[in-house]
Image (cartoon, rainbow, N blue to C red):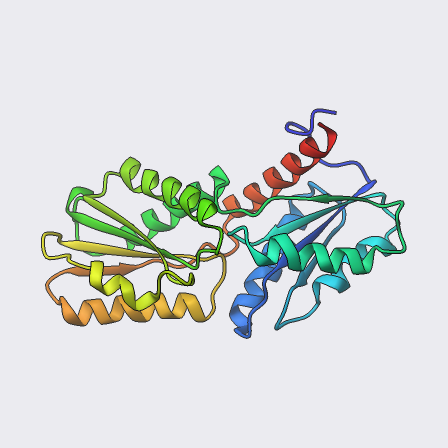
Length: 265
């Protein structure tokens, strides 16, 4: 079986889709909608969603549901952008607790999403959508592009993500590209204001590099409003987050395929 071309996994596979979770009901619903879209893709007949915190069903609930379906192979697929505590410790710990008495199951851990090419493609689509919504015609060379993400304590992973996002800005032809990780010990959201000198540009695009709505997305949009008040002569655009865009479904499918390939090799 060529796992990179197969349209559907065998019935011996299940996917446990693990999200961070949010107190924001909109963000939680977006995750569940994404899970439903993955199910509708029919790549895997069993897709069970679960949250690490703040919402239900829990990740443990989802894993248990996969186990009850009596499938041998369970792909633990993090619907999380960055590699960090959640993907390296929290998820493996929960998996270990649920499956400690089921050694017969083949547990397959997939990678987080941030550097997956389909995710970067989805970023581009979100940016293009916001440009089309504007009533002004402003060239990209006269536009500053700012991506704000949460980031991780893993500096190497941050560097990888920063590189692909910087390349996206270069590919799209923006006059200047900034990438800022506001959730790391080294940086805070307010720090971006020190780097913000848009006077030479006619437009600024703020892109919240988050999968779902929630506190962080709202903070980025509030920051965009602050910038607009400070610089009324410059158009400040704020894009939506990635949410359940079809390209994110593509990215999840690809991560699942990659995880199986890595397990085989």
